[in-house]
Length: 406
Ligand code: PLP
Image (cartoon, rainbow, N blue to C red; front, top):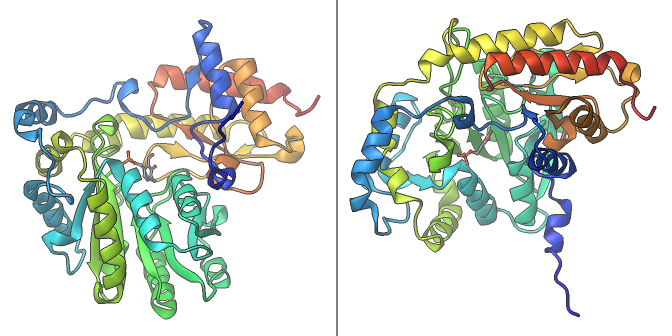
């Protein structure tokens, strides 16, 4: 009998949200067991709701949102995003430089497909949000990972970036604020990354989907604002800043020196038209969401829910022998380090699996984010404080007796 296999292109694709550990968690849940899920950055299940005004406006616009829109998106949404770019000081942006997408995810895929020929290299951070590596790989490109330095609050290691540039390198990706580390890059680091891109004539891709989720009074700088002479693509959306991941709305902004990328932009336009357009009801709320009441601000002030949950999780992790963690400054993730010698860890997926089986706590192993050593894992601290308390008690208890392979 003829059987069908997945494309061999998928053989080298790693993705954090699936895999044996998640499948085991699904089985446990299906058999009636409770699993504390600290594995996915999806705000709605944890009581973070979209602003009422946004829901109201989407419902109101449904009747007019039945047809395909312009492939880049409706005028009002793109105008609102263009004004957002102006406020963020992203230079040389016209309404035609804005593309809406079914989440940032679709646009990352589109940009990689339009850019990379077989063997073309693209610099991607390690750890990364693994969709970047997956999309670059599927497009036939070669993701080359540069290190982010835990000892320097997880900012990119600039020497490592320079070392890894070859004559096949086309672009550099930065994820700022970062998933999974929660890092926010200082302006001078961004300036130096832009300088490297300038020297080597690279495109800058900036994934800034967490740009409105900064804590501790920090302000975010878009790297595109520091590089008017370079071609930059900046990504953002409403999944995180407005806690409406399910409506699927994101966008990208092409800025700076578009002349050097004329042919690439043609490719982007082709792929954008091939998917016809992004979800139109979701586009209809962009203006309301971007320029109305920013409910997310109340979560990230010092007494806000996200800040308090971060502080709680970090203080618990810091007190666990064999665990160290850099305090995140943004988003809702942290990326703790495990003492592999103490715990005998050689395989971090096994660690995640063992924790799940023993304590019913689901986290994602660090190698799921293209981190090469088996010594990290990611925690999402979106769940309610009571859940986080229970999860931290269980993690602490588990680590007290854990030695891998025994
Ligand atoms: N980029 C980063 C860094 C993310 O963490 C995520 C989702 O977790 C995405 C992009 C995808 O976002 P969207 O929901 O807009 O597709």
